[in-house]
Length: 171
Image: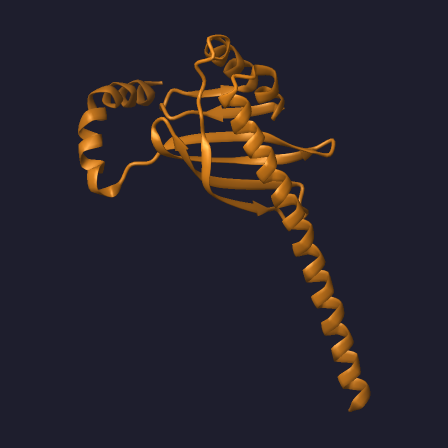
């Protein structure tokens, strides 16, 4: 009986230590990703084109607030360059952020509420650890719409998006 108790206590200790170690690793990674995302937002605010786009993986995607805005990194760089050149970029500050990990810890995904010139927006995306650095693989920016006014927003956007819906259905 005593040997069985010691055996199970030892197994419990090893499993607890393994879980704590894994959680600790992810906490370190969460901090790294948080700093990376803060730097990513700061580079945009400072209109630092090179720094901002260095946060993206070579093969990455940006999805903007307009239904037509989906670009690979190169196309997004072309679209964004005039804004960076004129120092007319965006200023996003994270209000609340969640970060989640794949089991192997090589991929993470996040969502965050952002304070922006458009009021609260949601940024979400996927990051991958590449050569020891977290890089954005996909970034999605969404404008949040309070439920109380969603009907009014739909009325405003319907004429524009009805045309796009028909175009997309015919493709």
